[in-house]
Image 1 (cartoon, one colour):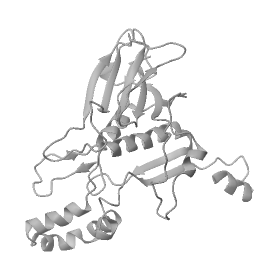
Image 2 (cartoon, helix red, strand yellow):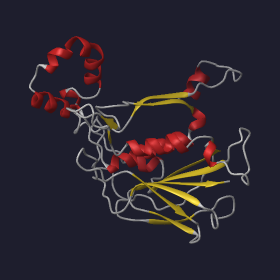
Image 3 (cartoon, rainbow, N blue to C red):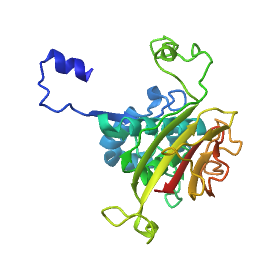
Image 4 (cartoon, rainbow, N blue to C red):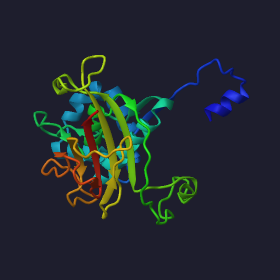
Amino acid sequence: MIDVARIENKVPPSIPKPLICFDEWNVWDAGRAKGEEGAEEKYVVFVSILSCILLNFLLSFPHTQTQNNVNKLISRYTLSDALAVSTYLQIFIRQSMHLGMCNIAQSINVISPLLTHPSDPSTPLLKQTTYYPLYLFSRFMRGKTLAVHLRAPEYQGSMTEAKAPDGLSYDWVKGRMGMPWLGICAVVGQGSEEEAEPELELGKDGKGKYACLAVTNLHETRDFAVELDVGGEGLKGKQVKVYRVGGDGLGYQATNTWEKRPVGIKESVWEGQEGEFVFPRASLTLLRWRV
């Protein structure tokens, strides 16, 4: 669309192409956080404009009524949603040369990855499932984007049951692009100060260089053993740090609550001795090693 607009308006090539700004992206299920009941924009506008004026008035309501109303506005995210967020983030990394800014909506409460306790402000924040891919990408997926090539099985089912708001099905998507079960992106960048080691090649700022590979396995029941080819070589002999969200038999519907939080980040180390790495079903895995 940008290219068409430039052509039609005779924009000279000397003028740089504008970058895309992707505002208010997120995974939002209208069935769980209904807009007509005040979720998302209605709630945000209500809070931002009237919260100071009506604070005392709201506190005068019985606690149970206020809590029930607030619960209607909150989207409870599942592991499936976390995998969708990681897929978003992988697309942003792969297409970073075209993107100037991508803003998630919102950062806390309603449809956000972080929730405050409805009755006890001293209770630590609830980290929903979608928080963890955001955390891993924010912490590690920085630097320069690497070109990646993937060969993986594709989704072969129908998309007729998934309906767009206008009632049309999404079957057309399969005719436009492949739909592999694995999503992937990679970067190379500088490590932190504490990670720099004397024998490691250092960057200009004196910090060690690290490569990070993020892989999302969207299949709910199948693990995938993948041969990793890094510059014509595998990762044998390299110490690879592994950060994983999901897996361990957790299904798509696994959800973090105030009482139980099954979804988080599990850390381990892989020596690359097997040659192939197994990406567990329904998981995001981030591999990180020195280069």
